[in-house]
Length: 40
Image 1 (cartoon, rainbow, N blue to C red):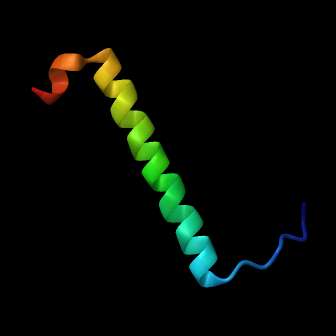
Image 2 (cartoon, rainbow, N blue to C red; image 1 turned 120 degrees about the vertical axis):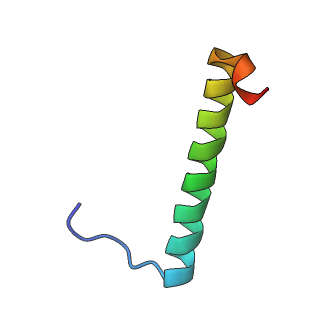
């Protein structure tokens, strides 16, 4: 996979922001399920 498709800056930013948002949501749900008292 040397030749990667050329993404526009806007597209890559959206992908990065989306992945960060999904990661944050996943970590929040995981943390809440493991430590429900953490948010109180």
